[in-house]
Amino acid sequence: NSGDRNACTAAGMQLSDVENAAYDPFLSLRFLQQACTANHAAACGRLALIFYAGEGDVERDLPSAGNFAMRACAAQDRDGCEVAEAVFAEPGSPQFDAEKALSYRRTNCSYGNRRSCIDLARILYAMDDRLPAEQIALNACVPGDPQSAEVCAFGQRLQSLRRKAEAEREAAIQAARNAQAREQAVFDRYMAQ
Image 1 (cartoon, rainbow, N blue to C red):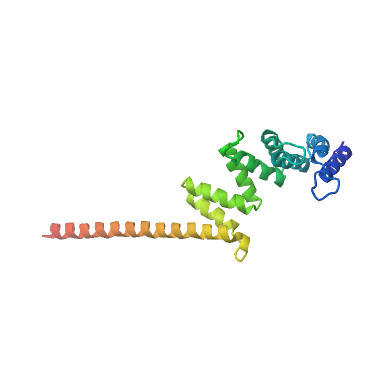
Image 2 (image 1 turned 90 degrees about the vertical axis):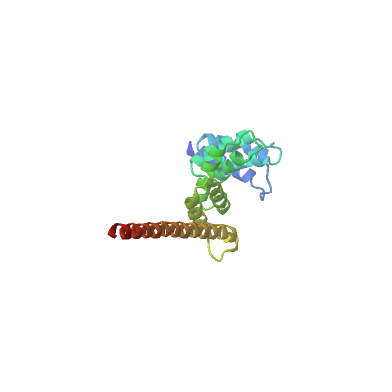
């Protein structure tokens, strides 16, 4: 029932809190797993963190971290979403999955995670999806915030490149129109003779 779930979650969260004197991530697993089984997203997210980091007597286990992270993220737990992105984006891992990593990166960016936003913008830019890359970077930019400096600079650089490309394209179109008008004028003069 919900009382048991809440009690398990509370016990598991306390035991897995590094600032708690009773910190014991291994003991917390039992409580967190019961709470996660009862669909408590925060418990699933904490399990994902523990297995991803390999805290205390708990060995790092990326498949478990990924499973708990996906479950937590599906219930909108931010820790779970961040662990899911990390698990699936880790190139040397057997869990590596570029599509899943990109999906979780989008989710984390929508939650306001600047690192995810800048990574997402860079990936989209590399995939030649430049306007969304620019928009993501500029939306994640908080002018005057030192933590936003990198994403702001990247977004402004993309915006500058887009404007330059648009100006070059417009100049090429205008040059083609001018050339066509000159040809038409020559043709008109020839026909008038």
